[in-house]
Structure formats: structure tokens, C-alpha cells
Length: 116
Length: 114
Image 1 (cartoon, chains in turn cyan, yellow):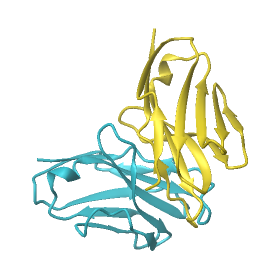
Image 2: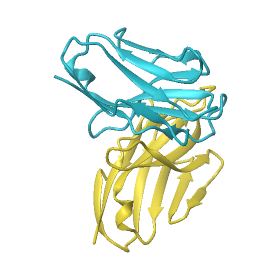
Image 3: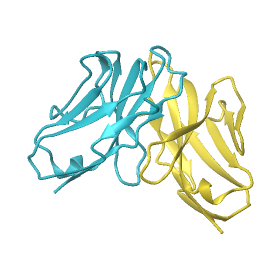
């Protein structure tokens, strides 16, 4: 596609509900990243995929957060038993490199999650 | 924990004026430093990428500088336009990652007023 797309753009969930956020990276991009951006803050790294392999999940805040990219393209970030502190914008980014990270990361518009 | 500090937190300037945004970081050693522009409700868009050996990088009216000795970077915007109103985020990539694990600053919110 022309850019990184994410869906849904907005999600309201009741506390305790499970949610799934989708990311469609730029076609052919090897690397895919998920970030969490709280209001008024910069994005914070959650997890990184190189093709279908999840190489780094050190940023996931708890075991309620799970990400997958089974075929090396589309990725899903799942949050189980959502809590109010999960409310944030979840950004997905992709890049064409699989190594030292000098290539530009292209970000999607984000999914704004509000947990009530 | 690696940190990236930006100043000012917010800034209002008149259309046509220049401005300079600052970024101080403690990430060391680092691979590269990036400046991103983030419009409200949108994802960040890359403006410049500099490696540790580069001192300056330009992209149109945007010029980024880097002093790796003092661990400081700046983003200078020339002849500002209303469309420059956005958050500008400084991002540093640690060297010890074989891939890009980026440390983001909180951003400077710039408002260009007519």
C-alpha cells in the first residue's frame, strides 16, 4: 500500500474487555514496530518484528499485551483484560531494513484506545 | 535508562519567523539521531536522520545539527509556515541494538501564529 495503515482508528473499551489492534505495514517492509504514546508524551517502544519473528518484546508492559505477525506482513497487537492505564495511542511503524536501523521508519496514524 | 530531553516544551512564533528547538540526550553510545514531525492525530513523519559522525543535515526549511561531544542536537526551522504547527520529536537510536530500538523525547509543541 501507499503507507502504513492501522485499524480501528478509535476504540472505546470497557475495563476488562479484550481488544485487538491491526497494523498493515508498507508492502515489502521487513521490520515492524509497535509503540505506545500516552497523552503529551513521546512514543515508547513496545515490540519489534523482523518478518514473522518477534525479536524484541521487552517494551510490552505486562503479559496482558501480546503481538503477532504470523505471515510477516500484517501485525496484530492484542491487549487482554484492558485497564484504564492502557488508554493511549498505539502506533505502528515499518521500515525496509532488517539490520542496523538506518532506514526511515514510516508510521501509521495510530489507534486511539480509551478504556472506561 | 537512556533519556532524551527536549526544550522548550512548547513554543509560539509568528508566521515567517525562524525558531530553534533543542534536544539533549544521554544515550551512549548511539547509532543515529532523528527528528520527527507529528501533526495532531497523525503518526510521526521523519524529517532528518544523522549518524554520530554527521554535524548537520537539511531537509528544505528544516536544518538539524548534532554535537556528539556534548550530546546535543538542534532543529532550526526557517521562515515558518502555519503548516509547521506540530509536535517535533527528537529520537535517538542506541548503538547496541542490531535493529532500531528508538528512544523518543516528549517533543516540543510548536504553534505558528498568523
